[in-house]
Image 1: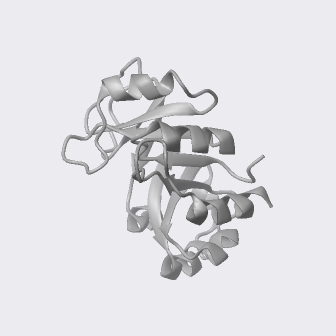
Image 2 (image 1 turned 135 degrees about the vertical axis):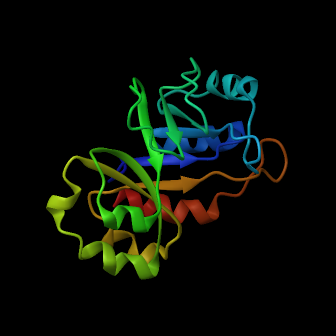
Image 3 (image 1 turned 90 degrees about the vertical axis):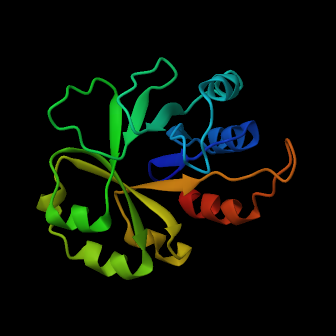
Length: 178
């Protein structure tokens, strides 16, 4: 079992979806934003979901599309006045995190330089806030400095259909199993 909550984002193929589901990640995230390099169609999402069990499904979108495809959403804007009825995460900057946030679920990128700043935030400032850090710019040796936070990892392209090397992710998996 993984030692923290994990979102595998930008899933574009069945190979990634099955690999991360086997890890036991909490969420698989599919990006439907039209100008994203990871954009995937609702039909492809449905096709992948038929072959994967376990993780909840998140749809990254710029609109409040409460689609039957997803258990939740990842939004780039905080819609504070609208009732949100699904599991919803909001993408924010690290600077926004430092300013303080209302209760909710958030995703923020973090890099090596920001780790020390994070340690200085009083724990009371993060009560009721569920933060997941995108660790794509983080040295894995610093991952242990993110206790009690979820992480976001990245899917990627297949070498060819059904073939992909996961060597870089296998090291992360071993770290998360410790």
